[in-house]
Length: 417
Ligand code: EPZ
Image (cartoon, rainbow, N blue to C red; front, top):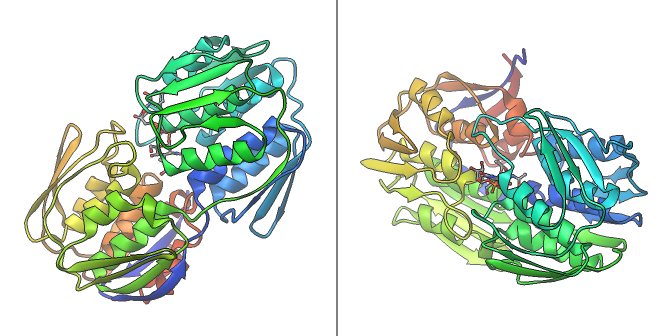
């Protein structure tokens, strides 16, 4: 039982400047893509977060040579999966991003099905449909997934839903397939663009990334490259939400403001100004929150990874707000925790309705990465002291969350419960 927690006393305004760390959801697929060549691939601006640490360990377990020097990770050598392919760890959801790369390199992958998590079942049908279209044979007994392919062939793949992970896996496979692949109705997230740019730097022939149709002309071999990832737009959005709620004046560098338009649109009001610049954005707020509603959806619409932070803010709004979650089927676990702080939230199916008011401090429990971030945002405004337990979830995607916000003036610290 992890008795660590993040202790927060609400009421401080946030002021200052910071640069967000590298994007978790860009670095993870790029680490997987580094397996597609034996030559050295270096990735700069990698964040110090547990998902990246675990991914690096997984690459080592698979036989790759991984060296971390500060924020630079280099991967070389080749994976040496056993005849039955590499057995990946169930606990690593991001091991999903290995599926495509390992199938390309080993011709066979056997992995425990990555379990569902607190935000949903996380099935793999879109991944597997696409791999089968490219000639892979897949076998799944409910526990273990086995994929085999003696060479993948390019194909036209129409995805029933623009799955980010499936787009990433199929992009990696198509890069080394025989012939042309077209991904239709694929994901458009900035992290897809980052992966495509990384693969292109490694010699892949890709066009259309960022749109709903990506074309890939398979090549025989990929080579090493020196890659750099941009700032994490969700970490930047989390800082934005906390400043909007607590009041203050914060400048955030490092994230591409072009990737944050739907987030800015959902927080901008007469009480919260956001000035954009090529280097980042400046948010100034008087701490008053307008009642408003959002619907989460695939990029470029409002991101599901900002939903808990948005819901936290609307608990203090001047009226009724509604949040419809269309990406994951079970992503309101934080609503119950916010209710412990006095939030007036009711959840029916995939919609949360919240009547704004004031919240008081309480002991609450993170149930996933962004739920934990949302609880901390609410606690930074609530009256009194809160303790957010299960900080290991938050550490998956934020470098020292407490340090980040205490540097802006929040009364927040890591403690043992
Ligand atoms: C990525 O997850 C991100 N994770 C998630 O961020 C993010 O919330 C999600 O994309 C949506 O933007 C990483 O990049 C490591 P999906 P992924 O496949 O790829 C269903 C965070 O907090 N689906 O786009 O798993 C699925 O169940 C994390 O940083 C199928 O039904 O997301 C979900 O309901 C959380 N079948 C929806 O699609 C499939 O084969 C979106 O999933 C695949 C997905």
